[in-house]
Image 1 (cartoon, helix red, strand yellow):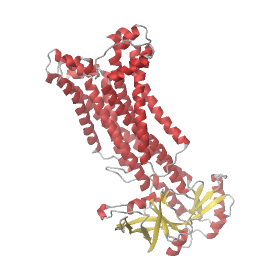
Image 2 (cartoon, rainbow, N blue to C red):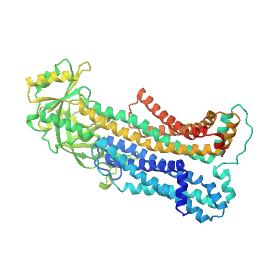
Image 3 (cartoon, rainbow, N blue to C red):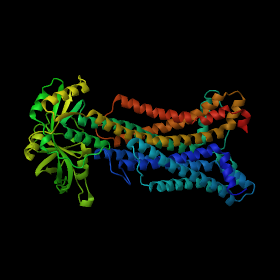
Image 4 (spheres, rainbow, N blue to C red):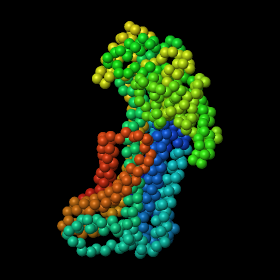
Length: 623
């Protein structure tokens, strides 16, 4: 038989073990590659494209993807090395048998290295293909168009996982080559037992637990590795599920509150369409390159504002003057505890919407670091998070080592404003600056607003009330129109939620590969105990006894890992969560349900070897 035919036939003979090894490696490679591809589509990390969302939410996504990416890669690497190590460790007895009949070490090693190389290459190549398919499917679903990501990620991930699997697969082969055939055939080396199997009388009381725990203690090395592996898996699940659910709800509330509930916009057709486009840019909508916000025909008469304010079903009329121009950073100085003075910021510039608002009549409420404008403010400003992270952040390339928008100022149209807050706002993707409308009108010479945000009382029907206002405007000022903002905000929220959900399901592929690895471990447990369990079956033990013994072992491993992983994952989640997260009772129930569902799914899936062994005939088990 050729040196290639024997390994191939051997792999085909052990189809289940071979399939589990290839599937585990495939999912590990695919999940890691998909994570890199997806992050580049959103504009994060290496090879990133133009980002979506505001810079603040973008940074939050980046932070989560960084943590999850590290965990996914770590689990993938551990899984790949574990499954390769596990697969080759099970060949120790075969290695000893072949050596016992006179086959030289070099030929035996060549057989098993061919098996290792075949499964590793197959798993890595299938993983790269699956990663591309996953990326294509998700990108088409979210963005409706597919753009090729950075293709260098594919060979990078393939080489890393191939090398890891190959190295850790060769370790047991080299170890087996140095031991005698007699030791290689021994159950101590085959099952990695700490001591030889010793059968002793067991009392009827606690028989099931005694058999299960004794087997776990005999396989300390394999048990310890699988507990470590699943602890990391549950850390990943906790961070992705708990962090993703909380962050999704919190950021959705930021987006909704920044526009206001039950709110419509009133403006001329051109201005209204432009504002809707500015809102939709958050979820990938396009905005015109140039729009003349200072055009005189965009102005809204004060008589319209007064008329709307008098309507009984209107809660707030938020008058805003929107302009567009360049703002410039104004640096400052800070003093340390020792009295040393250092410069903060520089003189960078950025294009921004500049929105004049009346702090006494606001339809919106923002998530603000610092504070928002108050009625007594005159030359104060609040900048969007994209402004803060673009021109008010440290930049070593420009020699700016310290920067803080709440310490610095800005200038617009020659007027200096003190920055008192940084807000998250989807309008123009966060490139927005808010200042008091009276100051903006005085400094620019524009005396009337060019858009109104009207908030209805909660008791009214928004569609019907908007229609009534539209009819009223046709009589008062036919140039004005009504623009519902709810559909645009819902689209932004849906797009945001879809991306968070994608991040949350990324660990699903890692979870599946870990479950496959757990099946391999339980196959080892079933094989190691098959004679003992067959004897018990022959003296009256029922098939369900076999399932119960192996189920206890599975649950001990999984619950130990679950406790460690969820505890550490919760700590990590609290460290990386955004300030002031929105956590409700339903959120906690959702997180708990998803985590226990994952635990239950792995537990049930891992019992496949137990059910297979329980259904087998006693003579078949003994042979």
